[in-house]
Image (tube, rainbow, N blue to C red; front, side, top):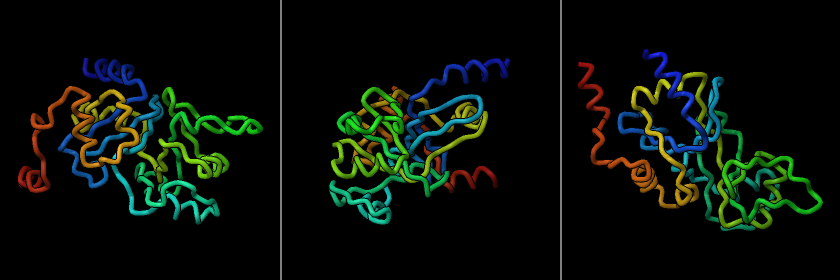
Length: 204
């Protein structure tokens, strides 16, 4: 019966969605994190953490690629996850979704209505010349192997919630977790508080 329940819940996990870490997740990267999950199947899944800004600016990263950034020089890149942190991915809104007429759009992927993703340097160069209002550069991504994420969900590490568009490019990092929980119908005050001391006390 438990196996049937796990299989059934796995089938119901349809992307895109938000993964909201519960307080019992103490890993520094995932503690109170909100992950935009974009792909899920029997082989694994991946997404990007919405509330982990780095101290490195987009301009600095692009300068290393010899790409000039025409946007706000203070905008920082985000750490999308611990997997392949050297890999850059750009999520951008509808204003930047149309390529130049002479360039067929074969390198971008629509992940939500009005939201696209690319890892192509040519797209990055084009977007950098005229950045759309909604653009975020992620370094790395959050990934799970086959069955791993569902195991974490079943042990209550994650709450599954709907995608809230205002959170995708929000600069209010400290409130993203609470807002995501509210969107999933969960009051943060009802969740048990877990701290490293609590965990250690439970072991001793």
